[in-house]
Image (cartoon, rainbow, N blue to C red; front, side):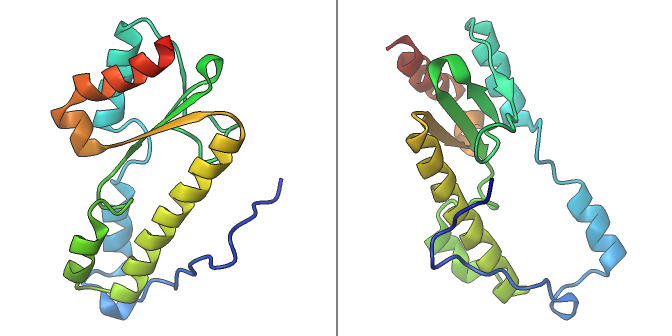
Length: 154
């Protein structure tokens, strides 16, 4: 299955070592601590969803974008996105990127672009997509859960 991207796909340049503060081994150690799966907000949401009586698959590879939570029976995909990596309030935060701007701005904008492509692909497959920010899950878990549950009951 080949991926089809829009014509104006953002090209992310290689990370420039000179522009950073860390050497490669130090940066590697720091970046290795960043989780992509089983983050605290994901675990909290999954626990609440399970307690509500719903079953799901996690990081489902058969769907575009590997949703954090996929409910095939209900044709629902749920993503819990980190504010930094997925560009929450990006227009406000973009000027604050000081180090290695060329790399990080392109990286985050490409992540945002890819999120839109994944949403479109899932919608074409008939899935309803929910995207929540980590902060939303921390502060308003019940509200986020209720949005999903009300959709599932329809």
